[in-house]
Length: 407
Image (cartoon, rainbow, N blue to C red; front, side, top):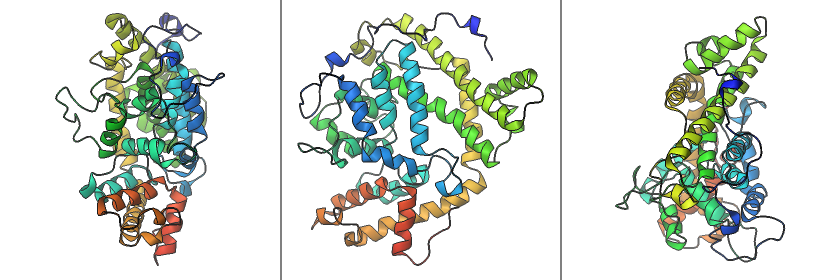
């Protein structure tokens, strides 16, 4: 499983010119609301900067990744996870000769739609929104950057370029088949509504840059969730020995450093696993590109498959690791106990705001008037999805006599 540097071949970590398959900011399809181009920044650089300066980006600091903030200061949050994904995505884009700024922008925005308390909050909100199209964090990310950010005089949202929005919506692949039907169930209403205004070609694959961001997300949480699991005590190095990917790396680290303490051993495992996975993606993707020979970004859209991938053996090992993390970390009894309380907080808040929108702060309650239930429910979901963990707990304590303890 472990590979030596001399075996890697020419995978290209240095500067290389933009390849034919890359997205070219000079050829951007533009923005929903036309704007003059910047004389100092490309379209994708402007997107990245707008994302970083947004309110939604700052809120990621206090949103759960795996462990709720009250459980400790050193666990990853949505913000630190996002920064780690962006770094890996940019490294992949550089090696694959595509636009680093676009890959970074998609990575930085990909978790904007996550609720407080991670997937627990999303599941609770999806259940509450079932009668009105459900709740999907990817669709909510689009709502955040296309509607909910109010920073500009001439439009709602951030008015990001077509390529960044397309990458955000489709970084995990097309949403509909040739027949227009959703590939993984109905397409969220928010995405369909935006697509009707500014078609994102939901039946085609995203560009190489968005694919880099998607697989960087896998690499980041496959690795760093182990780190947080070790820090929490829910995982141990010994538990990882039977897994092919981390187990083989652990064997190598222990052979090289037989008296190394467990904390540093864990860090060596993390850094080596990221390197191994990144190098595997670059090698495999270069082979995919050589086989497919895309002569333009349009060829990438029409390739009929994802081109930025793990090798078959790495994919098998990565899936084994994911299954392990689900069984031993995400579904651990201690984690689930905390999530029970988080689930109750989100459900209680939705019910309270839906029954009486006047409980929401000024600027939110004033927008509804006599709105239909569908509009009111989505408005409440927008408000709830934007909350940080801390604010959700604070609001629950304001509105209810008893609030679950999450720490």
